[in-house]
Image (cartoon, rainbow, N blue to C red; front, side, top):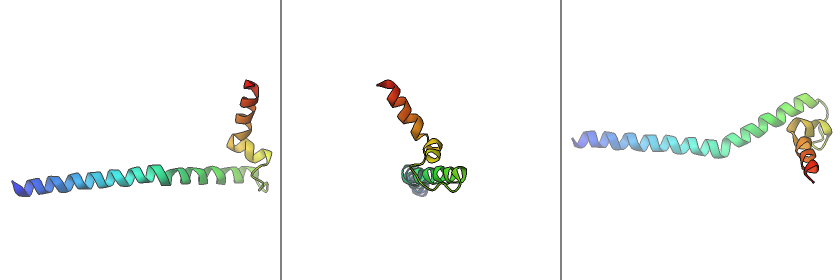
Amino acid sequence: MKEATGELNMTVVTVVAIAAIGAFFYAFVWPAIQTSIKNNTCAVQCGDDDDPKSDCMKNCRGEQEASGAEAEKD
């Protein structure tokens, strides 16, 4: 019976460790990956327009639409 309890404890520790690694990935690594994908996609769509404040980059990231919506509220 002691051996079965030890196996269960090790299973619980393994599941908790995997959940902790998943939570860390989701909280810290995944947002960086999403930002990188978005920036690379915008760079490809805008071509040689490297200025992050250009209209193409703003349109690609949705920044211009958000600022336009704020202006309409006022």
